[in-house]
Image 1 (cartoon, rainbow, N blue to C red):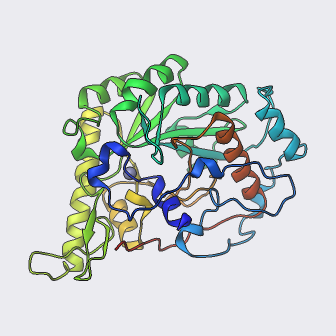
Image 2 (cartoon, rainbow, N blue to C red):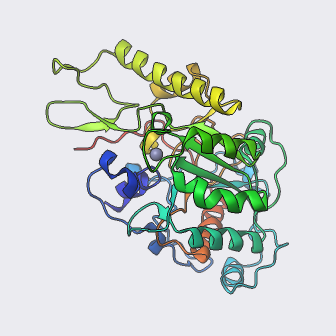
Amino acid sequence: MICFCLMLSACAPSQHHAQQRVQPSASSTPGAQRTLIPAGSSARRSTIEPNVSTGMRGKARSCRPHVFDELRLKPPLRRERQAVANAAPAATHTYYRNVVVVLTYHDVARRVQAETDTVSPEQFAAQIARLQQGGFHFISLSKLQAFLSEGAAVPSNAVCLVFDNGYRGIYRYAFPLLRRQRIPATVFLIVSYVDRLENDLTWTEIASMSHSGVFRFGTETYNLHRAVAIDAAGDTTAATVGRALLADGQPETLAHYRRRVLRDLSRARRIVEAKTGQAVDTMVYPYGQYTPTLVSLAHQAGYRYLFTTLGWVLTPGANPDRLTRLDVGVWNETPTEVVNAILTVVRDASRGSYTPPRRYVTVWR
Ligand SMILES: [Zn+2]
C-alpha cells in the first residue's frame, strides 16, 4: 500500500482539510524512506519511483538518451551526498544541468501533525537555507515554462517551488521568507475554497502575494478537488475523472461529465486571472489523476501546463500534459532528506528516461 499513499500524498488534504479526505486510510512516512543509497547500488527507493503507485511496472528506457547526456553526477555520488549532508556544501558545485526538479509543498503550519503534508515554518526555512547553501537555484514558473517549451537555459541545480491546495500557512510563513530572499514560487488554488475555508488563502492575501512579484498562481480546479461516487458498490474517484452518479443512481453521460468538468476548469482559470491580473495556464490534477479526456478538457479550458503527482525530473520537451515533480513538503522531511531526494531522482533520471502512463486513474472504495 505504500505506493498508493505515495501517489496521494502530494495532493492528500492536510489535517486542515480532513473533512475533504477521500482516500482510504493509508499511512506513510515518505520522508523516513529517504535514506542514502550508495553510489552504484541498484536499490531503488519507493519515494522516487515514479510508477510504483500505479501498479504499472518498469520505466521506458532510453527514449531520449540525448536529453540526459549533459546530466552527469560527478564525482562519485556517495562522496557528493556526504559532502552535502555534512553541511559543508559547495555553493558553486554543479550536480546537474539542463534539468529542473519541481519541489511540491502543501501546508506550512505551527502545529505539524504526523503523516501530513505539512511542514513547520522552521523546517521550511531550514530546507530553503540548505538548498541555497548547497548551490541549488530557484527558478520561476515562467522560466520553467520557457525551459519546457523552448529549451530556454536554466541555471545548474535548478529547482522550482510549488504549493498545492492554497493553504493560508503559505501566506503566513512561507511568503515573508520567499519575498525577503526573492525566491519565486507558485500556488495552485482550489478556487472555491478561497475566502471560504478558514485555513485557506483569502483574495486579499493572494493579491499581496501576486503584487510582490514573487508568487505566480495556477489552479487545482474550482470545486472538483473531491471524490464522487461512481457506482452502487461505493467506489469513488476524483471528481475530475469520474462519471458521477446522479440523483437517479445512474452515472452521468459523457456529455454531462465533459460539460461539468470544462465549466469548472474554465471558471477556476477565469477567476484567478481576474483576481491576480496574471495569465493562468497551469493546473494540478487533483490527487494526481488524469485521463486523456481530462487532458483535452484542460486544454479547452486554456491550460497548457498540467502537473501530475508523479515523482520525476523535468527536461526540455517533457510532455506538458503530465509534468512530474518531487513531493518534499512532508511533516518529517529534513533538509538533508530534501537534498538527498533531489540528487537521487536526478541520478535515476540520468540512467534512463521515463514516460508516465497515459492513464493514471485509481478507484477508491
Ligand atoms: Zn491537492
